[in-house]
Image (cartoon, rainbow, N blue to C red; front, top):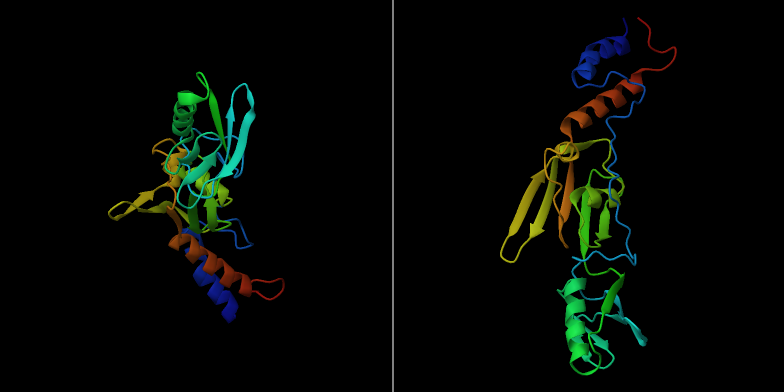
Length: 231
């Protein structure tokens, strides 16, 4: 036997050991996360979205055609609106802001006004998704967004992802916190799909076992070709 054949025979059991018997380039457990993708810049606003600087808001008063205005939140968290001038909106949800505006406008200008607030551009809340995903990057959050939805924005995990070792790094008021989650348990309903917050960093780690199998199969492909490996 030549050297290539001896090498192939010696390494073949390791490929079986780690669950990859096909050395012709099989897909190594690529499972994209596709549930609940969130589209940025939509007029559909989740009630619990936290308004922040640079968000673009549209404010309307029902049955008051002249009171429809688009305004961008300043870096200090304020917007300027007709009749009531500056209003601090940063840190409020859409529902909370509607209540504030109804109270302010109802004092002197309207009788029982019904105010509707749309977030036309979501720019203040972002999450970072990095590691073993198809498109790592920084993505805007729209309302309540879960871990699976955030990964979906990055077009799912890659073929080398470790589904049992997904970490969320979160900066709180006093200290940093780290959460570890298992995607398979979340999908199976055995674990809660956690809600991510603005400025969270999600890291999908690479599987050592999958990386090992890929390295072995890549090496074997270098030895296996038609007419070059013969006993």
